[in-house]
Image (cartoon, rainbow, N blue to C red; front, top):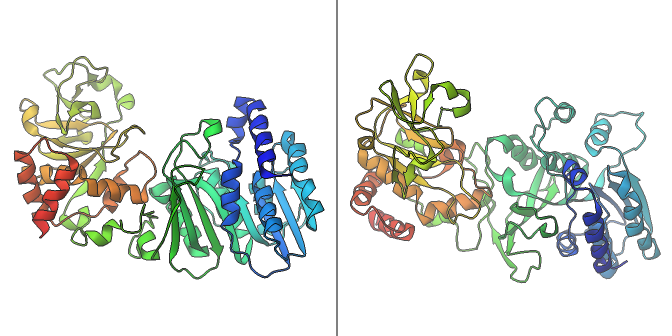
Length: 497
């Protein structure tokens, strides 16, 4: 069966599935274009026998793309053994119909396995001799795993811990387990969300795959809504090729706007540009062009916040937990409570009475531990909308806007840069905000983050200029308050020359 015909069936089956069931099982099928591209990434070796794993097979589009490539390129494999895991029994007939025709062209053994992939794989890796479906080490794996959070106390977390895997989502769990099932030099291609590339929640998963494999290829989609457009999925996805126990070398990076791959751009990148050897978080950076490695262009920006004596913390006031202490209108026993909505064009606008958010928090024994002394701070929004052009949005907290208040409350949707929980020098606060609003930082952040959330951990990992440069930039920013981010970049270049 041709991939184009399978793709029509994919769309028809996807549209016929109950929405609640699709969401429960995270059933978002791979398009034929993406499946063919994924299959093209494998570097086939001279082995005569292939053992292929397709975990979360759906109706079999990925396996079909793999088999299509084997047939069209007349690859000289004697036999192909395919294990296709699909937990939804309603899809098994579609899956069988997709695969059975390939037996006319290759010596193909098909096992459709309806049991839970994680449970079954963990039992095999732990040596359970009594389970029904026996595993063999695979030579290749091709995956579009489900995307669903794993609760800390769930059976999945317990099972995964048995084999040394600690992660928070099924997509990373599937990827890590599939990697564990590969033979040495076996290859895995997966289309997964980019969210694992940074942040503390996926640190152990990043370190797991970096210990056990070499990254050979990364493909990035510029568009958030095209990889799974038929299911209206809004997610920044990458396709990654891993080689089990491989020796790490340069990484081939490619980009395209969408799944047509019409504007495919490819370039090689040294691995230390993908993962910095001195980064304890093991962030995975994905440069968007060959000449745009920001860290090399701006070698002067080599300081972390900690190096310049500063700290970043998430705003400690979680409003729904302290609701009884909040006030819409400031009163005598209150101090300002600052939300993201209290900033406009990088500066404070407080109070705001036509907004649903409180403007103040009462000062008492319960709330004092969450308050900061009034002063200059740099505030960074933790969340921005997907439509916004910039990911990092910073503002200056100016104490003069708060009517002589002794303390300030910062709501949880803000990150606050401070010095030992105290304010900053005025020029430094303005310099930090200007720098974080630059095009440079926006590009740097996009190199390692595919989501719109900016965590305190992310800000701790961003490189900054020296403190004296930030202060000079701040003095310039105080005079030039309404400038474009590109003008900030130009001023930075003047200061470091």
